[in-house]
Picture 1 (cartoon, rainbow, N blue to C red):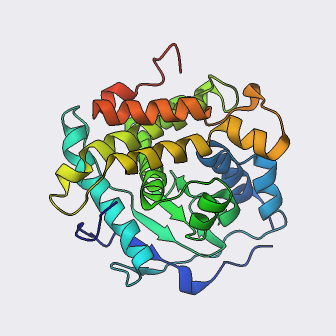
Picture 2: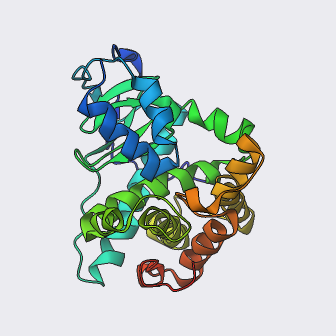
Length: 282
């Protein structure tokens, strides 16, 4: 994936030098983050609760805003900016005004969020309370070593998936999903996650055109994206972690489903093709 000439808007909040917030109390913040972790990345609520159990309410943090100097941060900036360049005109065709996330927050280990204390164990996540995407960049190592998803486009897929959750907040899909339930092969959570995968595919289809010569995406990159989608399917993760697959506990969809919806978004290039809530077959 080529991205070095991509536009950077500086919609980044860098908290990495601040270090992790002090975590020792619990309370409503932990409960909210358990739900966020469950909906956004498939982390079992008990896992998230254990991670923040006994912690105090998150200390308010605010990192430096704007351009970042390191390559890792610049890449994230380019992908977030590209999403804005794509989704503005694409959603306008559907009568929806796109406003970017408040920022993409880069942090280390743990940080305060509008939803409670965020922890790196949750993976990347979107907090609808403050409209921010949170990312501990050490997750890239886990993406490669644990999930076997390599390549920069796999990272771009993850970022664009989380921005997809922001779009769902704008459209009301997130509220619809919560009313449908959070667990099961056809639950609101699964439909929400597959739609975010589809939105990532829509972004990939339009990103090169929207950025001029700034971003180039090859077929090999798309294969990397499909590989990442497959690697984080519920069935793949359950098979790896517990040796058996339990569809009734799915939160994100199977590997095949995640690949299918990412591919559907890429092929159509239209969010209208991403209506997982109306789909009879996921």
